[in-house]
Amino acid sequence: MTLDVIVAARRRTRRRLTIAVLIGVGVLAALVYPAGLYVNAHLDDGAMPSTPGPHTSAPAATSSSDRAVLPADVSFIRVAGVDLPVSAATGPAVTVGGLARGFAHTRDGAVVAAVHLLVRTTEQVGPVVFEPTLADQVVGEYADAMRTYVATAYAQAAADAGITYGQPLGDLPAIVAGVRVDAYTDDHATLSVLTSAVDATSVTRHAATTVELSYTGGDWRLVAPRDGRWDTAVVVLDPDQIGGYPPLQGR
Image (cartoon, rainbow, N blue to C red; front, side, top):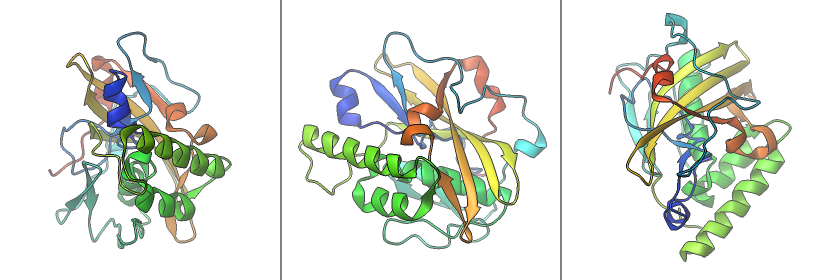
């Protein structure tokens, strides 16, 4: 599964796992055991959230219905340092103008959509990507709040780092480790994306980001997390909790 700015993370000696995501985002039947995306969880040396928030859930036992398997033709494109899957069978069918759209109306299409939309709605990717994604592919009560929050976070981070406005903030310090499908219907899907990253003490941390999707307007779209912030959808996991997140097959 929000993905935090690396520069700011280093300056404050903390890491935020991101998308959201990454980030936030135990996804890809094709991402075999890299660490996760962003997950708006503060990885300070002190206390970390270890219990699910309002929109998160603790891992459950993995069953065959939880698994998403990417097809043999899957390939990857890199966005903000995160490998995102692309396949003729699952989509995205189009990746232009910062957008990734045209996801298959299937469980596996939802998995791929969740990973793409989590990463592409973080400030890390820069406005060339997050602005069209937030404008065209995010719905729900908190969609406007998310647009405002991501734009503000990006502007502040870019100014702090001396980055020209419009440029990406740099690669995310995390990878997608697995994805669990918690609920799926023809018009709604809830997924939990497992991401991992190394914190300032060289310890690998894991977090799960809840990603909700709605199939509307002929495509999967992200339902904005509460208050428009990925950190409301993230929970940091202990090592013994990550077994319920099947890695995506194939990589």
